Image 1 (tube, rainbow, N blue to C red):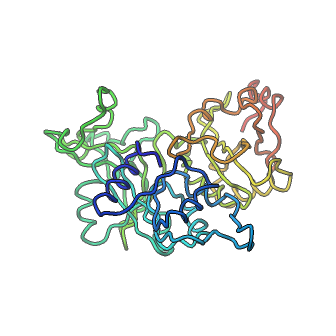
Image 2 (image 1 turned 90 degrees about the vertical axis):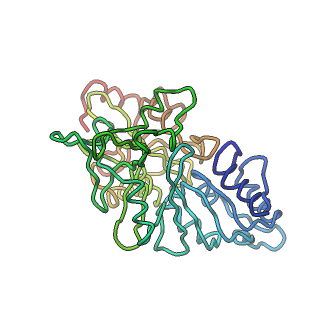
Image 3 (image 1 turned 45 degrees about the vertical axis):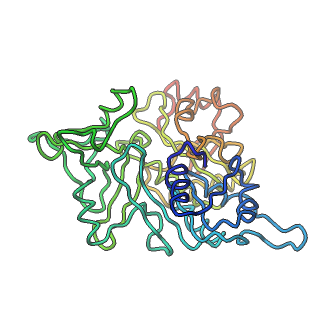
Length: 378
């Protein structure tokens, strides 16, 4: 990970310095050199962010050229720690490389709270935090999850009181964190030389007049019973609305990503001519360069089985390889894909398909003209 990322510099490097541990740094991340460097350094733990673990999981196995031995588990890694390990990759990554413990956490550099989930079995699979009896009281005092108005992308407010409403256990909403009402800078210093961005993160009059909270911008779900697991749902702005329903890109990515041919699934909403809302599109990296009719039909059936009808992606964009739309910290990017939409003239050499008659069929300039002319209603 690049050291400009706070996970690498603070949680990784500084923690090792504090405890007298050793940090092994690579010049850059590569699935071809990652495990050889891990073995060479005798590392017992590594940090990840974004889709790092997915890229390792979908990479071809490394084989000893002399003995033919599969080297997937030939390492000393006991624990991995980071954020962004999706549920559809969790078990595949853990089982393939023999990882004992996954330490998934949630935090932000400017945030005023964090959460973590130490998982060694299926109980904590996919959670970003766990809160027991005592920590739950602290969690509810410092932070909460409120109902979101998906039209305005602002916390929902009661028309009579003007106040927000906390969601019930198991429901999805935006995570907000309490700030000192009289001195918010004591816990949130804001963004350097960007007063607009700083102000947008502070919300007042949430549960009582004058109180102040930090907006995380993240949609989450908390199971308030049992071990109090906290789950990430989506980023506000990534969730899109189709057929008057809210669609979580993370949920769709998880389901589509479980198809055996899918190496990577990046889901986003696209605007269509003569249609309201945004239709679901997924940029797919597959284990085959040219998807055949059987694969396309299987993808459609798999999505229809695992998702509500309104959430099934209407469009596929087949990309040439894994990790093409990512940041320097292996987080997937959606903004460029969203802007290009499904206009065949803007997607380069990528192939486009649309859901038609229970399967995905080729989508080209002729079909695009039909949409533009209003001849097709999805």
